[in-house]
Length: 211
Image (tube, rainbow, N blue to C red):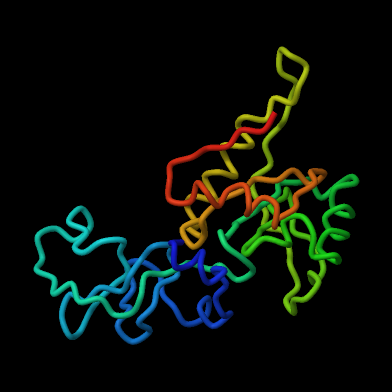
């Protein structure tokens, strides 16, 4: 995101997700990038890719690039507002959490008010079709890891958290958004309020801890 994104409300059309490309892919035909803050830079007439600056020597060595910018700097997938939010929840398919998440989906509330979202679980079940959308959301299965009780009486779930963070990082989707937000199924998330709180910190290295 950028000052330009803020001034325009930061909302992009749905076509961005379908037509723009990822870093490493040839972007010359599309002329646009999914990653936040990235621009389609040309190497030559045949190839260009999405980078935050040109050339990315670490990635491309000492190749000579023309560095012509093909299109503006990307706002990422800010489909609902600025700054963009990529939110996810981790739950069990047993118990009260699936029903709670389905009700949030029906209302377009919680993580379903974010620009991008995923529900990770110990199995694959349907969350239904979120309000205002057309595609059914299903949980993404992650390996089952036993959760015990720590010395302070709380859930000993560090290994579980490491596993789902590994998956989030491996998928790279967080690069399309300004902020990545992990939300408990029973947490109350108001996406517009979170955007307002986080807007002043876009582009900085910030980690927010809730208590």
